[in-house]
Length: 404
Ligand SMILES: Cc1cc2nc3c(=O)[nH]c(=O)nc-3n(C[C@H](O)[C@H](O)[C@H](O)COP(=O)(O)OP(=O)(O)OC[C@H]3O[C@@H](n4cnc5c(N)ncnc54)[C@H](O)[C@@H]3O)c2cc1C
Image 1 (cartoon, rainbow, N blue to C red):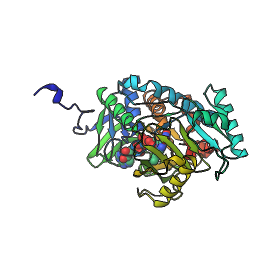
Image 2: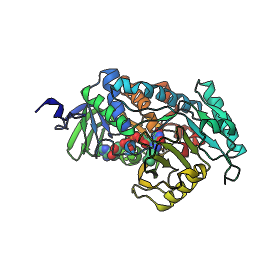
Image 3: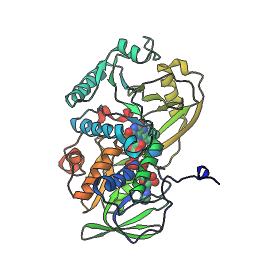
Image 4: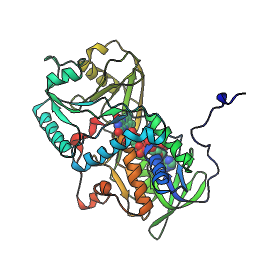
């Protein structure tokens, strides 16, 4: 038969595990794969294995609501995410894979005087760092999003918003597959269904991992397991100040293009976008209890739908197509924990809460640099685990939480 009928694989099927690698990355999500990809691409470090306990992209990377933005509240956070958005802008070309990144704008609604002050503060921090972000008032909101209900009879009337034009959405599965394909083509080994069950230390240094497929030695071990971070880091004796919660989302049946900005309301605990398939993608804040169980709840569907309809009453007759959950690893200051730990050569990417997908390229480039050179890049220095001992927190609560 002709070649056109041959299905080409995105990456090689897994082979036998070697006894030793220069680098073992735990977690086959966007962060683990990006770290492996940039290790090979930027530093020529190719003797790398990505170990994933389930299928590639089975964690939050394959479940998120794909918002990419950089309008954070702290200078440290805004600079970090801004660099990530720039990397995302060129990632389709880099990977030679269409990630369907659509920067169609992001509106964070303000429903009170206090919220307007916070938006102003964020806009000022953003503008000082050259990030396109400004406060807009109802007249301009009506121009940017004519479909939104700005009427006075809302439960939470809209006073204004933070408008961030470069904010957008992307195809999350494409990001995962593109990074995995790029890493694989550069020589990295990808091992799905390979669970790390132990981490060996010798004289305070990580030297090997135990897996359900045997023992593997490594010069450097990187943990990029998001919701499972406390469990995996615990295997190395590293304690993280993280709690794991579920976050839920749902999509409606697809309809014709209707909404071309992302709408977020922290007050109403809801955010809405329309995907390239025409579905309305709707999410909320994490559930307040800690759990590893991926069970959705009816109250989430009920209140998110109710709040969405306050903003867009026109969607009243749309049917919900599917709903799902994912794990979120929340740090006390809503900023990530990135880089070295007290165990030598055991590095971590964690504390991503509900907002880590947008950080995948910058996590990959900075962790790859740390692994390859032993130097902590300036951009991630403020996010060191150590900050919880030295009390130098980077409080991102005002711009994280429901804003994703
Ligand atoms: C519903 C939802 C909506 C979200 N929306 C957004 C958004 O709009 N924008 C945004 O920026 N972020 C969003 N996030 C957050 C974002 O998805 C995550 O922060 C990000 O994907 C984390 O990526 P990761 O690669 O670190 O982790 P993951 O993608 O979770 O990958 C970790 C992997 O580690 C594997 N693993 C765990 N333990 C082991 C082990 N012992 N051995 C081997 N492998 C192991 C897991 O199976 C998993 O595949 C959302 C999250 C959810 C759940």
